[in-house]
Amino acid sequence: PFLNSLLSQDCETPQLNPVMEPLSWMLGTWLSDPPGDGTFPTMKPFQYLEEVHISHVGQPMLNFSFNAFHPDTRKPMHRECGFIRLKPDTNKVAFISAQNTGLVEVEEGEVNGQELSIASHSIARISFAKKPHVEQITRKFRLNSDGKLEQTVSMATTTQPMTQHLHITYKKV
Ligand code: HEM
Image 1 (cartoon, rainbow, N blue to C red):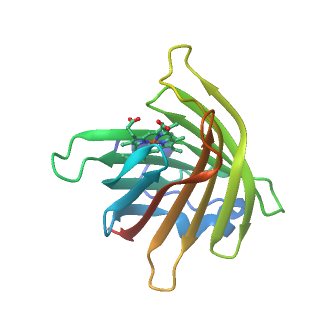
Image 2 (cartoon, rainbow, N blue to C red):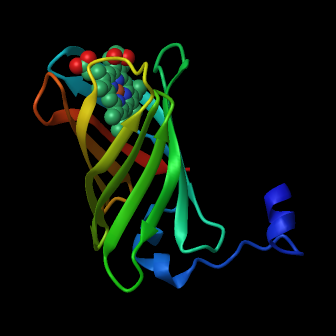
């Protein structure tokens, strides 16, 4: 509400910047349905809940936050937030994310229809980040024909080659 009062006099939602139209299918509040699946060769498979907000304020970028929770205890787990940019008049996308694990990363890729494929371009981390360190990340987002959003994340670490870490579908809420 305070943001709206600064953004406009009468609390109207700003119009989506036309540059962002190719990614408009990502906008909204999304909730995992069913719970997400976590995997990796080094760990026991796990499930998680995740709430996603993807919004805009009329700038040529989207704002996002991904907040994961334990499915039983509902304790907060992984969290990340950032921005998604599109190079004007192209399908080139940049995804900029800060994660609560101490990781900051930039991924780049392309949007094609209702599918976004990106791969890490640079990764930085705090000096005392937990090991093993992630060395590469790829993600795919897709809007399915049933209206659900799907995300798949793979990663390579200092000990494992590129392998799927997360798969989740979200329903719009
Ligand atoms: C473990 C990276 C998102 C849950 C790990 C590990 C890495 C990692 C490097 C250690 C792997 C190993 O020990 O071999 C990432 C990255 C993410 C991400 C780069 C996002 C791009 C998530 C999300 C969840 C999650 C959304 C959901 C709850 C876990 C769990 C473990 C783990 C439970 C094992 C225990 C632990 O090491 O904390 N992740 N992760 N991760 N991740 Fe993720």
